[in-house]
Image (tube, rainbow, N blue to C red; front, side, top):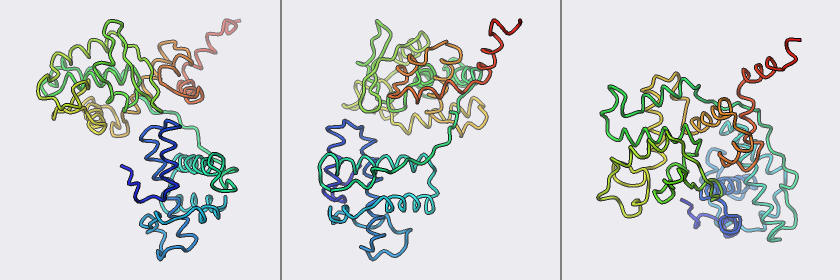
Length: 333
């Protein structure tokens, strides 16, 4: 939760603008607040505007008294120094530094270009750290089938624990639809079109999209609804599809725990290395590898804003590339 009282007024104005005008998600606003506040604390430390002497204590610095006069002095070198501090003090990885860079860039663009509150934009020539291309981790087709078999309430020796139908439906939707954790948790009963076998989810940036449900998903949802609690549900969770044992909307943490437990029970090697997001990667990879899904259709299904994000799934399967060459009609001439 953002404590606006801890921020200078111009930072709170930026967060309000990002939320209302740019329609950024709550998570993005939280990240902006954390990143920019940390940066401003570093600036006070670097400019010797505090009694704090050690870099380890920078996060304790108070910034709600900071003025735009100080911000006007910030240079590109100061930003580079902040990124260097993050790498040395926290061993921040390139992906983390890239996120911080993006936050700083949009912040100064707001102050300089949009609101004209500062004369120069020190982040105008700020480059993003180079990111090594990493292929996403995902379950194989056989591992995915094993996970579903294990999570199924019909599996012998595994079907007596509480919430088995719910957990199986969660795993089924994640592996078949490739939705994000927040999208799954946010599903409402009213979002599901049972007649046309599809549902509406709210993705990044509060963007709405349609996800079509296959037979496995519909069957799992119906089986769960037969045992889903009907009484004493918390008022703000009456429309939630997935409920916790406290009869509240299920939380992100609970879903993460369910996935970890089911992976372990399924005997998936290095189960602790997988997460809910890895199941999203799995769904996308299996659809691309076995479903002959067009890359544009996959982009739409996953809710990616840029096709470049989706294109990573075209590189995960060397076997598919080899087969393409071997199946060339000229290969046997």
